[in-house]
Image 1 (cartoon, rainbow, N blue to C red):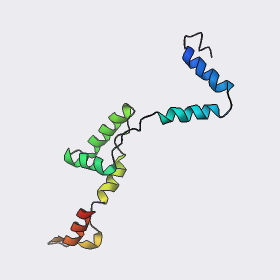
Image 2: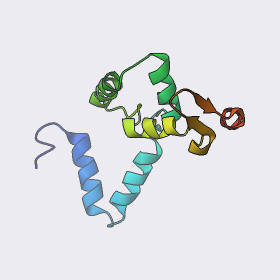
Image 3: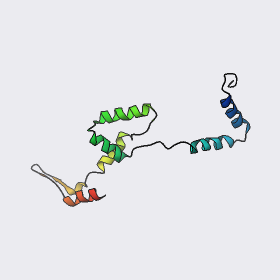
Length: 117
C-alpha cells in the first residue's frame, strides 16, 4: 500500500501512527472520532405513524420514502413493523370492544384512558 506515492500523505500519516503506536492506540483514535460525530436524527415510531396518517400514505409509499432516505445514508424513518406496533398501541383493549351483527360498541372510559396516556 503506497499511500505517499499516490499523494495521500494524510492517510499515510494516520496509518503510520496507528500501526507504530501501542495496540490500544487505534481504539483510542476510533473512540475520539466517534465522539465528534453528530447523532443522526431519527423519528420515533409514533412520529412516523403521525406522518403516515397525516399524509395519507400507503404502506408501499412509506416504504419508498424510507428506502429513499436510506439511499442517502439516513435512518430517519423507522422500519414499518415498528410503525405497526405503534399503531396497535393506539387501540383500546379488546375487552372494551363489543361487536355484533347489528352494532359495534367501545367503552368510553377505554378511549379516554388511551387519550390521557
